[in-house]
Length: 88
Image 1 (cartoon, rainbow, N blue to C red):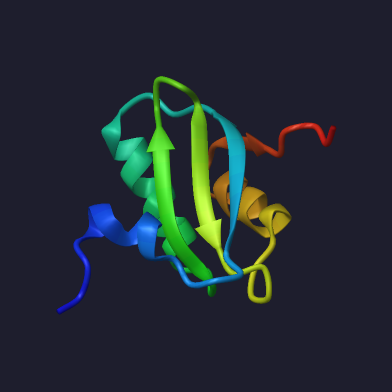
Image 2: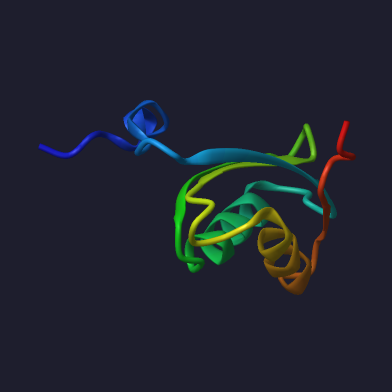
């Protein structure tokens, strides 16, 4: 019995990390779906949550397979403007 998609964040394998990306250019749910589809093509992506209103994308991922700069490149290549939050 596999978990429902809503339960995926709670069951991410150990070692997975979360990246919060700022994304400009999203205007509707189709934009959110497009970004999710593009990121899902990358290895190591576990879950993607897109907030059009918040202009943000939260990604749970395996850092051994993919890093946030690659996610930014993919989102930018899909026609949006993504960037990483400043490091504190």
